[in-house]
Length: 171
Image 1 (cartoon, rainbow, N blue to C red):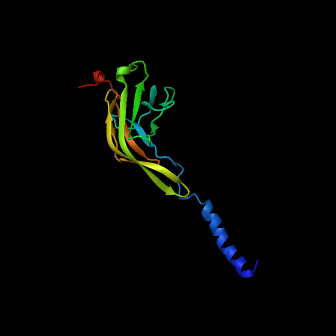
Image 2: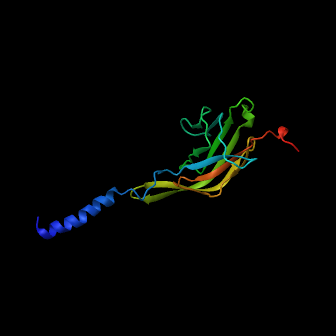
Image 3: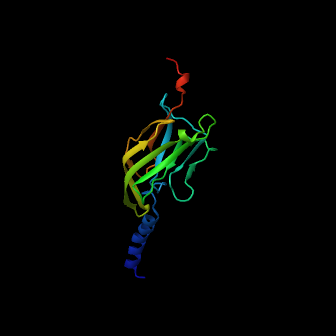
C-alpha cells in the first residue's frame, strides 16, 4: 500500500468504526409503551397496589400484564400499532373488592405513526392519544398530561384510585 493511501486509511477508517459502533444516539427503551403510575385520589401521592389483575381486553394470546402476586406502583401499558384503540381491564382481587361489577376499564383511542429514530435505534411507533375513557368504580380519575407516547421512559399517565371508604370518612 502506498504511503498516501495508508495515511487516508489510518485517518478515515477508525472514525468509521467508532461511528458504526456508537449507541449514544439511542436510549435503552426502544419501544413506545405507555407508562402509568398509581396514585391515591385522596392524598394525590404515589401508592403501591397489590391484589390487582390487569390485562388487555380482546388482546391476542395471554394479555395479563399484572398478576395478583405483584406489588407495584407503575405499569407499562402496550398499545396496539395495528389498531386505533386499546382497552385494559382492572380486576381488584382483594376480598372486599373481588366482584366483576367493580372491575374498571380504561380505553385509549389514538393514531399510530411509524417513526425512524436513528440508525442505532431503528424504527418504532409513536402514538398520539386522541381520547381517553374509563369507568369509575375503584378508579377515581386519570390524568394524561402529554398525549404523545414515544420511547421516552417517562410516566405519561396517572391513575388515581379511591383509597378511602366513603363510609369511613368524617364529615
